[in-house]
Image: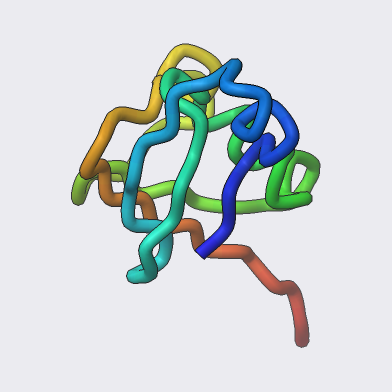
Length: 82
């Protein structure tokens, strides 16, 4: 389990929610967007597909889609080859 913004959490500055990320429990800051989550995971400039609560989420919706408690997020990283 990963805590996003642990220093801010310890300072009591954020609310933490529990979500499911790629089938595993994950703690994140309440209101964190999908875009911010991808930045935190080091995937912001990678080719990924995001499934949000069982539906594919278009990249254009990543910046305004905020995480809420019990959300289910699956991130698939595209790997090229040949």
